[in-house]
Amino acid sequence: MMIVCVATVAALGLTPHPLRLSVLRPRLPPRQSLLATASFVPTFGEDQWWLDDPVARGREPPRGVRRDLALVAVVSSLCVASIVQLSLSGTLQWTASTADVATSQLAARWVLAVWRIVAAVGCSVLTVARCSVSSVGSFEDLDRRLLPFRTRGIWRFQGLTGWSWLLINAYFVLTAVITLAPTSPAPSLVAVLSQVMLGTAFAFALLVTAVVSFVLIPQRLAKAPANREFFRPQPLIMHNANVALMGTEICLSTLRVPLAQLPFALLFGIGYLAWHNTWRYRTTRTVLYFFLNWERDDALQVLVCLLALFGGCYTLGYAVSSHLRPHLAGRACLALALVAIMRVRAPRAVD
Image (cartoon, rainbow, N blue to C red; front, side, top):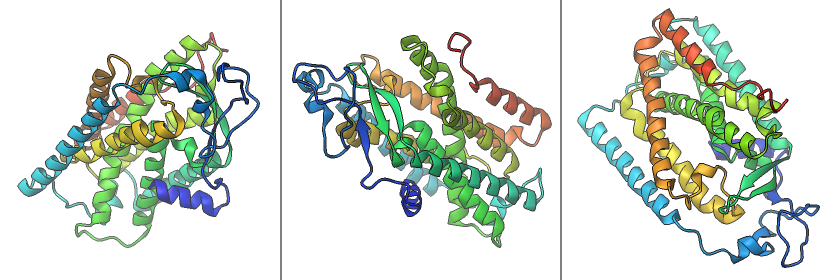
């Protein structure tokens, strides 16, 4: 999915080559800190900023990352084993068809097609626009220092929000194509893929919006009260439109979100964690979220809570698709719940 997005942006000539992530820092004398005023922008892949920063260069090797990666290995193994066992027992059924994907109990097929085309085009436009413009933001290192970074290209989607958005984008492109094409009631792997993506994208949209609204925004404003990073147009769209899109889609679709497919969704999240703690850290020497800092004393407990929270979001998707969406009151309750977790404006103190 990410490869497709990279190829699309590269084809439009909007992605730098090679992909870059630059940290703003000057050519400093050996004893100065990276936190000084920056004017020089080194190139990702060529300049390693931490070699010139005495704090980063002098710190001991990271602690705790092996513990996190052990959790990744254990959860991944359990997910794969669960998929095999559930498939052999018949609990996990691969019976979704393209006719199921292209059908809605609330709208005509042409309305469903228009909705998915509009959603796919809107998501794709934002994806290309975001990749085409560089941005300066702050990221923490393992010592909890906020460092200014410039990101561009596909690196603009390095966060959980970005991964979630790319998944939503891919889902709407796929289902729009299926809805427009001739369909069949026979089981289809493409339809099963759509079903897996629906449950995963809905759960991740809920998780991302809830974490941003109730964890990241309060934490960032506590450290920098004037920071408006989360209240710019693109972040506001990505942190609110994601749940609006997936909430509408799960109500319109006739696809169900079976609990037996939860291991697939967990593998997506575990894949992000493995990437964040290995290749991304070795490349940037930063962590995207303070709660993913594996040197925190409660790092393992935080990861377990995140997995449990994600499981709860996925279970809500199951409840909506199986019990709530046939009823007007159920759809209204879902809409109210989604609006309640959105953050559409900065607190008055920031204005």
